[in-house]
Length: 269
Image (tube, rainbow, N blue to C red):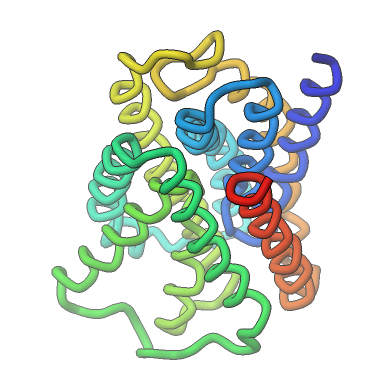
């Protein structure tokens, strides 16, 4: 148990720092770590991915607040974009978490691996952002569709949304620091409604770990959040001075290895 607590605390340090630094959301670290630990503790594969995804979103509720405060101080957050995309982000998040609740554990792992693989490939090989336009689309329906998809896919795999929103914003000519700072706000808008939804949809589920409300495990959320709330702000502050291209490549390799581990653990061993 001591080792497990230490791993979760360490996961909080790493996920918070990465969330603030790269704007990719700490969930991309939290989900696989939680998944592997719950499997080792003997919980069935039918529920471990749901608990991992839901608890990750619970952590992001706290981590994103710290990250938002830091980015607001650094003036990296574009509140006009937040206003345009907030409704779509929230509705997409709710729909994504409802969908994830009714997907089997095996299929949820497949979805996570596929999306994480695409994110890592984008990080690894994209040298410069693809520019679609000099600004966001003027049509409300297009903005709503883009933001809804970001909220949906982020909630369904338990991440803060930066993995989708940062590259999307850079495609519309937003500077990387502005994209990261704005995505920090989206992290909360994704995580909070999705956490509530997962708590409700999992209420009748049997075999969940102790101290769970629906699919949200309060103990996991607490252990990871204790450390992540401190490193998220630190990651945001140091992000302005580090080579993001190199960091993104390193993180992409880590993410590819994580995908490989999930495939081996779930489908081969």
